[in-house]
Length: 250
Image 1: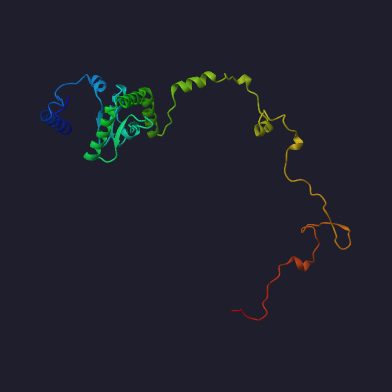
Image 2: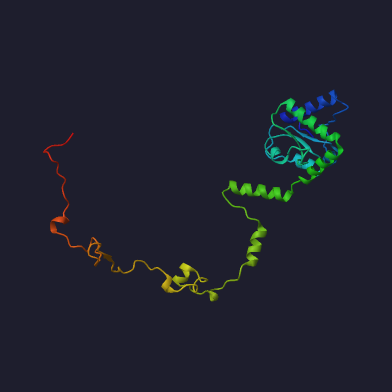
């Protein structure tokens, strides 16, 4: 039933009356009647037409799919995510789509649909694909609920998952608590007996003496580090670089 007081609704009602009067053998419409047999019409239709220029999610195409009716839709919003072009070779797809929101593109999509309708085997497969495209209402509701949670900065978790986690969780009491050593906290209780303490690197080791063979005499001499080597007092101070001339070089 159209609300005549609302401008958009009144404009749609006038267009329906105009089409009914212009094509009485093809179009029936009664905006004043509260229509309750939508499911019957969906099942009895050959195709569902949805040339919406804007459709955020779309519910009508799923109502057609429940009745096994393929849909001809403009690729926008939720329609492009649920209505897919029927391919003759692979027999995949549940309807027909058009890319540009123009009359010729819409007519061309309808012509392809009529061509499939003339081939009864292909058309029956198309209707079967449309029925199999029906989305479960519970799945859609949970998806919308998760989106509302996201908008509020929260994470949606199904109640059944929480209940299963609580059922599988072991009961805890202060009496069964056992303090954990730092060793177990670092490496885990399971890996405690897998290695000995000697296998752990506790840091730097004591410096060992290193000997190097002299190539000329063949004697082995102890390698002394820079910090242990005895140097002259004057070598411990930094050298100042002096140029050959008395002024800067250019």
